[in-house]
Length: 377
Image 1: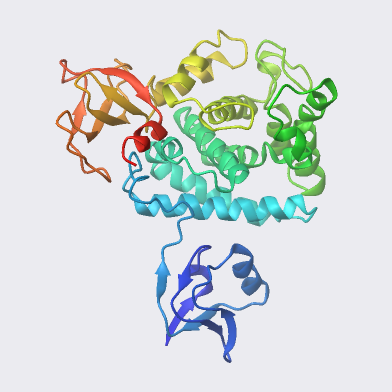
Image 2 (image 1 turned 45 degrees about the vertical axis):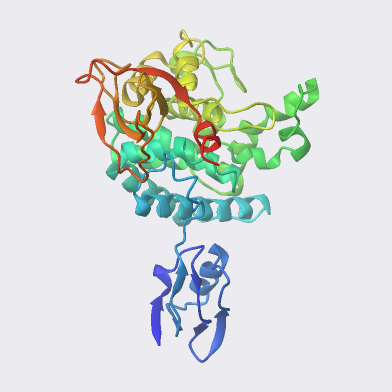
């Protein structure tokens, strides 16, 4: 008999034999994936251990790639598992909120703490995972988590202390929670919104503030991040038309993170941009939407070709960007996925090339991961 601690269970785990509680009470049948709510139920009952004669059938990652999807996906399976498990946890929290149920401060801070620790430990790897993952599963939770990773990347590059990073993570995770109050037909409308629909959509920061401060009883500092993340540096934003330094500092960080995440993710009303196109779009801001000093740090930390970007090289090889050269942003460090002779390398096994040192090779264009997948169907 194998004994498992409840704290070691993860959403998505699946066993080849039934899992039991003490006294032969069935917990999960064989072949059924464990859900976050199942684990929460055990904790609520005070159960710390379960038992089974079987073994784990599959790893927990929500976005387990098939052989084709491995193109551009980092080989760090532990980080990949953390990413998918965190999306599962966050999705469970969002489902509670959408049902008008509460989440505790401890729940949020535990999740935020795990994210802060992981992004600090693997800052660049976390960022590039966002660009590599093209799954549409649990889209809303994934978008919120991606925004939090991007916001923390900026915060770490700015040298923020741990307490401030925690507050930033809390606010970024919940910044769009008010979208749960916006009707689905408005969120998924393909065409231009009517005036009243646009007004409802633009009310979501207010809804977010009300949920965070009122329903969840969290701090006003966290709620202000959500309330102000659509304010603009030039004063043309909403809902309060705040300008410049009047905008909450952490909301200014979240605004850039949210905008970049939205550009690289597909929405019902438009296709996603590749990382390079999104960065070019943000570079053209000219002090309209974003704090120029924070934007400068963001661009410096990400590079013109952001970490994780897929690129076509001058010799027709295909590579992924793995390092930023701040002195020469157009010549990053890359790892080959397909070399000029057509040899394929998967899971970070290809040669690495620093384009500052290799002057004969240069990037000709950025690629979408879907372009690469289409070549290998």
